[in-house]
Image (cartoon, rainbow, N blue to C red; front, top):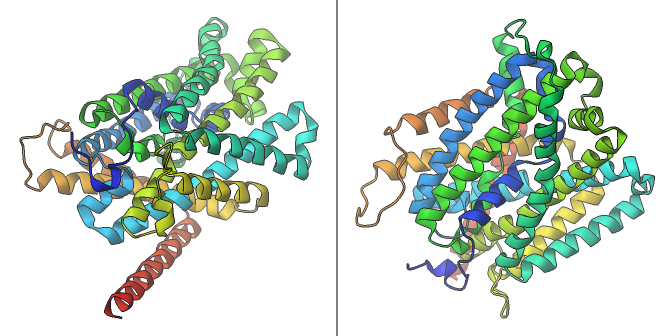
Length: 438
């Protein structure tokens, strides 16, 4: 299969298993270790239905990604899809939203959660200097691993995903026998407002799968691998979340409010004692590290694609002469994660990051609709979402509904961010045109 010019030097080495585990790894992040209590306290047993509701919403979005991912197989993920449908301007916005809004700040926050989790066991990690050195060592390891090749990066992710999932699967298997059926009685219906606000929080536990498509240019047989990888990985995540919520709700019941910061650790402690709580704290650290490793594997490819299209500095589009990887994109992206990790104080920007993910999804679903109605050569078989435009419509409505749940400050921050990005884009185009005339 022919590849685009942007990807002619990248090797296609990522298969269905690698993509599925990549999606599971980036989606099952640190949030799941606290999420069951956050949702359970607000919704009680009805929280299980919130998972189902979010699962349906995410399924509609994932299916759109599966369709457009088989149509547009070049490196860049969400960015490449939006550029193909709406052009460079919207692609530029999505690129910035993905790289700075969704990835750098999110990974920096996860690095701090790693240190915070380990600090409960080893107080030395509360020392700022030790934390900074710790961050540098971890990120440097990931940089070297990913520069050596996507295959090496995916191999590392496979192992860390398995290690991360083992304690979660253990809680499900052994926790089922400790469920108190009285904790699963449905007492009352939550208000629509409570359900909406809680679902907004829960929704963000499902996001991140699209990051795995940043390495689309290195996916083997993308027309088959992308839809299978997305559906398999997404299906595992939804089932895992439902089972974890059921076990946590059944074991802890009303006591979840007392352990809302670490409900899964509390369940593990109920099952096997204090060692269980410690094990889950370590698992939370591993989970965060796995998510950061996936980000460093995938997001630099977005920078690489943007540089190839002239949206970022040209040196970010350079390929390593030996390992055939976008090494400068990997180095620069990782360096920014490190800087934000040690600086802290980016809580308000983290709010913008959440809104950025929703906007990226909206752009991609709309791009799927546009490319669906656009005439194309049917000689190439591509995955097509069944049911016409029903599923993409569900995705659009779901995203808009969630965006309306954002606060006025969050909406204002999002508007300001996009306005600044738009000004940067126009300034770059003006400078480029002036240079061409000269």
